[in-house]
Image (cartoon, rainbow, N blue to C red; front, side):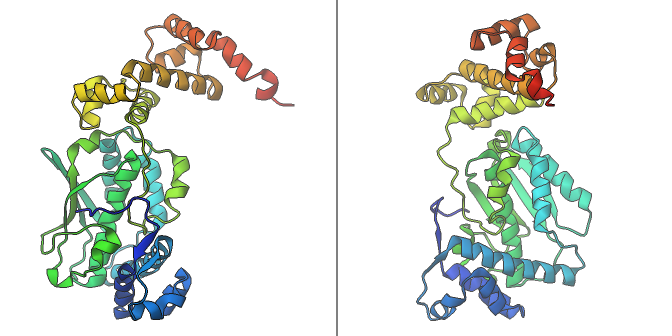
Length: 356
């Protein structure tokens, strides 16, 4: 389970570094090179002598990348598997960002792994009542510290993906690993901020199933910031203090963008694990109402579609789920003082649309 850690911590206990270096050394890896590439050579002596207590979070992520990739490629070689390059995570996330909810995104994830075949890890997602469990089968039988680290990195990175997509920390109910407790290392919670149950039949993590209905709140433009350290920086990111109203806007926008039905209050409340009454009260405390948020989302999307597409006004009215084009024109004129066709012409004058 996830331990309480600072979401914006910039320093990590040095013990996290020790478990990586010791394991790399045991597997015959290039310890000196890993330290040099991570910018940590100068503190190796202090670390070995117990005089270094905190290490830069970014430096640990660079060291983890060097070590875990070495473990991964060696494991693939021994088990006849295909390595899973980091760029594949980016491809997968781009596909997941096109979904409206975490539930849809997880479907894309499992399809993605199934498409890659039997030479990569297999993810299984099972929803059982109020709990959803992610299980990974890495198709390896060796029980070593290096294999344990790869498994926990896999679990922790996909747990991180779930939280990143919906822009909130997703508390873990349970984490299991199919490794004996003799491989337990005191530094593992420092490295991953999770504490798994050892000696189980599978490598898995579980969280409350209501998170599956959370809207995808990220954009493709945010991937570069994520991949600055991901998937090797596994402490929680700073999710910020995002309001419920901003998350509701993301949910409504996703539905409209995908030409789906605008979610009602029952659906939205369920997305955020709230009762409809609590949902209304939370919005009211933020000075917002569901009606206001729907209007704001329709207005913002109307501006974008008029400026950035060639859809007709009638098509935009339908996309935004207005009863008819006249109702849309009246609403748009109330917002801007201009009918949509006139506003579009002013926003996109012919000489700008067809330069030269």
